[in-house]
Image (cartoon, rainbow, N blue to C red; front, side):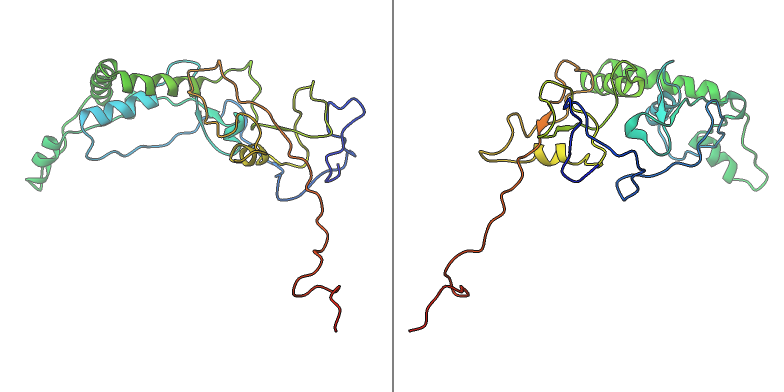
Length: 237
C-alpha cells in the first residue's frame, strides 16, 4: 500500500502488498479474554436515594440481548458483556439503619433483603421513566445502542478515494485514515462536500445513514512567487 491510495484494477479496493503495516494507526492484540469468561466485582454505593438506586438497578439488569462494553475495541462492537446481580450477596441499608448503628458502640446493622430493596427502587425508577417522555426517549435510545444490529457492518464512517470506483461501496483504507470523514464533515465553503456538518442521527432512527464523502482532490503544488521583497528577478540599476 502506498501513500497515494492506489486501487486494484477493478477500482473496488485499495491495492496492498501483503506486508504487515505497523505504525501508530494500528495495534496488535496478542491476548484476549475467552468468550464465556465470568468476572466478579463488588459495587459499593452511598448516599443514593431510591430513584438513583433504581436507575443503577436498571443498568445492571438490562433485557436479554443487551450488553455493556468492556475493554479495547468498543466502537467496533468488541468486549460485549452481560451484567447480573447476585441476590445472595446484595446488602443494602437505609440512613435510619446507620443512624441507629452509630448511636451505640455495640450496635449491629439489621439483616435486610437487598434484592427486594433493589426491586422496589427499580419499580419506582420505571414509573418515573414511563411518566416522562424525555426520559423514555433516553431509555429507548440506550437500549438500541446496547442491543446493536448484527446485520449492519460496524466501522467508522469512510471516505471514498479519488482512485476508486464511485459505483462501489467505500472499502476500508489500509492507511488507517479513519479521521478523514470527520475532517471532511467539518469543512465549510464552496469546496466542501455536499451534506457536510452532519450530526449523528438519533439512535432509534436508522432511516438516515451517514453519507460517504469523496476524498478531496490533491492540492496543486504552488511554485515560488515572482518579484517581492526577496525575489531573485529584480534588477539593480
